[in-house]
Amino acid sequence: MKKTVFLLAIFFALHSCSREELQNENAKTEMAQKDPLTAKQINERINQAIKTDGTFNWKNESDHFVWSTIFRGNKMVSIGFGASKDDFDRSKSPNNSEMEKEVLSVIKKYEGKDERNFLLLSDQYLNQMDVVIENEETITALRQMKNIRYVEPADYHYFEFEAQYNAAAKSSGSGSSGCGFSSSTLSTADYTSTTPSAKIPWAFTKHSIPEAWSYSTGSGVTIGLIDTGVSPEQTLLGGSFNNGASSGRTISKVGVYNSDGSGDQCGHGTKMASVMTAPRNNAGLPVGVAYNANLIAYRAAENVVLETSNEQTAVKTAFTELGNNTSVKIISMSMGHIFSVGKIEDGVKYAYSKGKLIFCAGGTSTSFTSFVGVIFPASMSETQAITGVKENTSNQKCDVCHSGSQIDFTFQMERSSGNTVPVLSYYNGQADYVGGSSVATAATAGIAALVWAKNPSWTRDQVLNKMRQAATYYPNVNSSYGYGNINVLKAVQ
Image 1: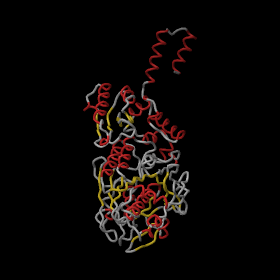
Image 2: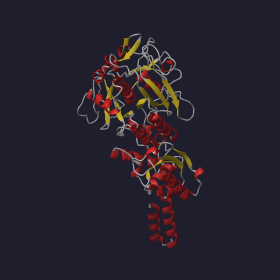
Image 3: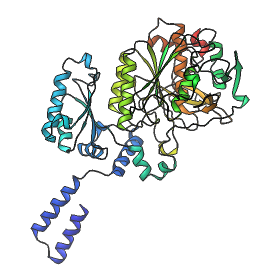
Image 4: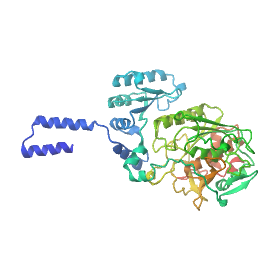
């Protein structure tokens, strides 16, 4: 537009440009507007929407914006179809085959390619597919279809681009991966000892968990963990999982990310598994909240930021598989994104429809994403959003934790000294500290296992109501911290 105005000024000053030349210039300007937006422009719009509206949703954006993001994201597209917004489950969707064929025919028409050249994945449980799309016209046509629930970029690397253009993001490590393999010598002020020779983290005492063990230790309940896997170097979460006072239980490890196994290559998942279910034995290391619960650990991502197509698909797969596993009652995930992802949302809804009690981290970040409230999928109504608070408080978030109206429960995980929760480390014989909303989430999932084990015939809602009744603010909710901290002894009595 500026270029056109400039040329018009030249015309009136010098009378040297013909009408035909001006029309050609206008045509060039119009063509330039059809070029994809830059990654910087896309990220700026996403950030603006979150700061202004509290959330970002692809449905609110133009076809050109969505297509531009797809173009900048390896041209990969995630499509959710269905007769309504809740028509995500193929088994409950009698017309799913016809709707899928219709979507594929539209793509074939506008892309001019055969299905085998653009279809990447068709989900067996969900009304969802991944495709490759080149043309903006295809996106426009799809978004106009009555049986389309969403059309979204499937591989747009928001954090990677933000690190290129945002100095604060670059200095903060693009949002923090949550990974680490370090170990620490635990301060004696941060634990107490229990038989046969295990350490009880200080945070457990604050929530009356040791007293609750007289009533329940999680026996008979299976927790599904969706994270970065569990370390093969940590035998207490392997061959020695069923050990000491933690007898008669099982641990399973599943890899659904990048086809390279179930082993943790980040460190985050190992710590989450530890705070939930580490055994109570004579190893002299931290015990887990539900030390007699079973665990199924999914490796579904490289780190805690669910940015890539492979990670988002793996998380979706983990939710659907855990949803279909009748032995699983609880799902815990301390990972997420700053905006919603349709395929993961479908996976969460699918697991929820199977009666699973789902806990997700409310968000942990450095200054660069401090403008974000409760992250996805903790922001969903089907999940319980958890955040971490400081010692002896229920309404003072930890230094890097998120808060907001969507938070359901809190967990004390940051001491006045700055120390966090002692857990097993990546390697045998070692312990470490872990903080943020991640550990708060895993601990709360462990608490749910204690309540459910005490009342094995209960439904998800009964367990959840009992947890609420034992929390700080019940029967009300705090505007930013939900029901607050749970008194676990009260919850299992």
